[in-house]
Length: 315
Image (cartoon, one colour):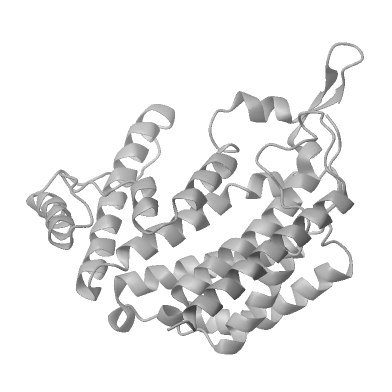
């Protein structure tokens, strides 16, 4: 399959991104400090998810893009987790503070029990001699927790599931207007996690001259995933901050600096696609074609903004 070009943001622009992200670290460190008694379970979860999103973006821009480095490929699936954090936390924010704190607390307890159950079954077969934490027997407390989740969903009218089952991330995404975002990141990031023949064959790089002969390795897509992580880490971090800026009490300066990075990402003529022209052995539109399309799009957007403003001033 054909090679991907290096990112248009490579070069001096990379140093600018690293510099801005470095300047944001101090405020991120301040956000990372928590007090469960003061913040509550939801706020602590929000802080942790934000720090994860920032540190992933920071790491993605510190890694040097070079051919043959498999690191970016194995990092890419983290973007799905960040995407789901934004969706779930935005969905749970619809609850009252006591209810969102209680929901997070109950979910943690249920997830610990489930993980302990699964690890107990695994180690009993794979390493029966190794001591591991085993799940406590089902108790009245667990039944009450499941019942309480059902009650919170019913009274808030946010979900109607039973037996303590929360709505899916997809359902949450629909409820908070992020369905398109979820669908894309589920598809593109999960492809590196689940069994996916397309992704396995995609890692092949060779020639068609002798009947598709080549070599299979994630390293063949090193530059693609290097750019993929950089572009979408900033995109999701900016979305996270835009959504929860008030909740996290982020400064105006923090948002403006991050917004400047988001605008630079917007100006890149090409973002990594889920399915590329190159992997399908098709001619990719050139830089001039992409630039023209961007100019046309910006012109349409300006006209819409002008029309809305004009309409707003009309009595």
